[in-house]
Amino acid sequence: MITQPYHLYVERTDATKNMARFYAMTIEPNLFGEACLTRCWGRIGTKEQKMSHQFETERDAVDLFLDLLRQKKRRGYSAVLRRSCTDI
Image 1 (cartoon, rainbow, N blue to C red):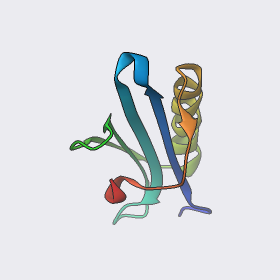
Image 2 (cartoon, rainbow, N blue to C red):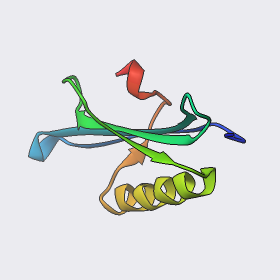
Image 3 (cartoon, rainbow, N blue to C red):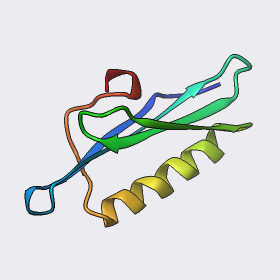
């Protein structure tokens, strides 16, 4: 059972490099009640790529969520208006 919603949408843009990327993550329960971390990424305005990870506990999903967030922050991604994988 998921105790609280986890959603993240970050972007990295650099006009000098013609770079416009996004990265979105969400943790939601799957049909069996397990935690499911879904990641979406790609160039802004194009079809995204998706990957899902299934976890037995919410804590394991949150650990990966936070690890990926730290990686994206180090690479220059910054938070923007909240969106989800389905909004892109």
